[in-house]
Length: 400
Picture 1 (cartoon, rainbow, N blue to C red):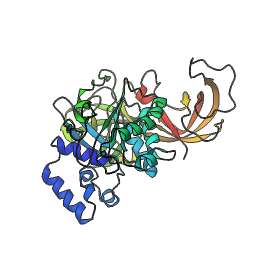
Picture 2 (cartoon, rainbow, N blue to C red):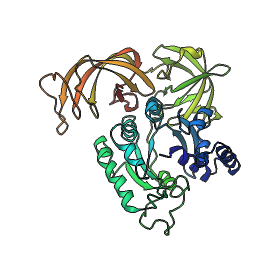
Picture 3 (cartoon, rainbow, N blue to C red):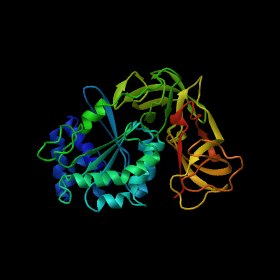
Picture 4 (spheres, rainbow, N blue to C red):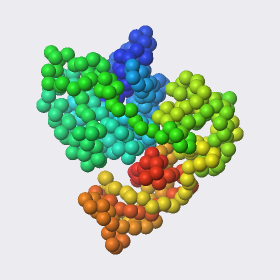
C-alpha cells in the first residue's frame, strides 16, 4: 500500500536522507525498471527487499522535528511476514496504517484474508497509544483526490477499528496523502489539489500529539527483539521502563544470566545511559550471543521480571472461524517473544457489557466472546500482570 515509500518521503522531507542518496536510489531503481520504488529504498536497504519491492525485516530509520525524535519501524505488509510485523508493533507507541485508495487495492487489503484488519488488530494488542490511518495514493488516476472515495475507504474500515477499541474522538485519526508525490506529509495540502481536507498534515500532526507517559523511575526493563555478535554480544530493543548506564549490572531473564553493560547506543549514536521509550542497542559482557533469544528480557538484577509457564488471562476472540475448547493450541506473541501455548482450561465467560463473570464453566468459546482461560506455555516466558505493567502483560494468539 506504500508504507516504505511514505517512510522514505518523510526522511527526505525532514532532511534525514539527502537528495544525493535518493537520486542514487532513483537511478538504481530505474536500472531495475522499478522507478516508483526509489523512495522506499531509503528504508528497504537489504538486497532481497529491493529485488522484491517488499519490506521483509522491520526496517529502522529515524527523523527529527523541532520537538520530538521519531524512530520509524517499517513493518512488512504481506501475509507470510506477519510475525515480523508483530516485532515492529511490539516496539511502537504510534502506529501508522497505510491503506491504498486505488480502486481494487483497498478492497483486497481489507476483505477477510487481507492484511489491513490483522495489522490494525496487532497494533491494538501491542498497546499502541494512537493510530493514524493514511489513505494513500490519493493522486492515483482512479481517485484524483475524490472526497467520496476517501470517505468510502474511511467508513469501510472505521467500524472494524471501533470494534478493536480505537476511538475517533481520542486515539484514531484519518488523513489523505500521496506518498509518491509527498503531498499531505509535511506541508498543508494545496487548496487547488484538495479543497475538502482541513486537518493538519502528517508530520505536524504527530508532532502535536502529547508525549507518552513512561515509567522512568522504577527498575530497568527491556524486552530483547534481536541480537547479534560484534566483538561481544549486542542486544536490541525498546526500553519499557527505568534507565541503564554503562558499567551497570543487569540480568537476562528467564535464564537469570548476570551481565554487565559494556556499551550503549540510542538510534545508532553511542551514549552513556538510556531511558524509557528509546530504541537502543546494548553490548553486554557475561553472555554468549547464542544464549540470547528474542523475547528474553534485560532487567534490573534486584527486581527481575517475573517468569512463568502457566497463567490465567482474559482473552477476546476477535476473528476465529471455529469454536475454541480446552486443548486448543496456538502461538502466543507477548512483548518480543513468540511461544507455543495450549489452553488448559476455560474458566468463565465475561459479559462484554457489564464485565460480569459467568457462574458456570463454558465448554467452548467462539468469535466475539470474552473468556478467562488458563494458558500453559511450552517453555518459561517473561511476563508481568497486565494491571502492573501493560506492555509486559498483553499478548496475541495466532493459530495459522
